Figure 1 (tube, rainbow, N blue to C red):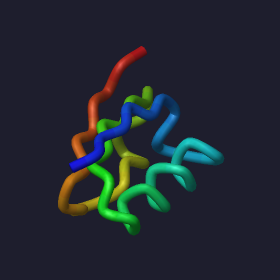
Figure 2 (cartoon, rainbow, N blue to C red; figure 1 turned 60 degrees about the vertical axis):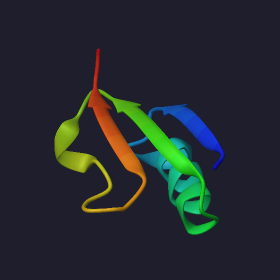
Figure 3 (tube, rainbow, N blue to C red; figure 1 turned 180 degrees about the vertical axis):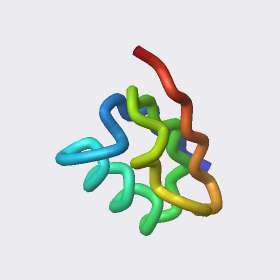
Figure 4 (cartoon, one colour; figure 1 turned 180 degrees about the horizontal axis):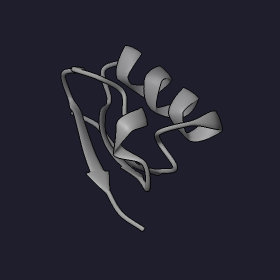
Length: 51
């Protein structure tokens, strides 16, 4: 399985890229400052809140 680390995954381009990767079966580790905007309840998505 492929995996990707995406910063800024809670909004904008970062979120769009994360969603597209998830749709294509790629495991995503998403970094963002605002945990309230993380992609909810997605298999293969690991959210990490970081500043």
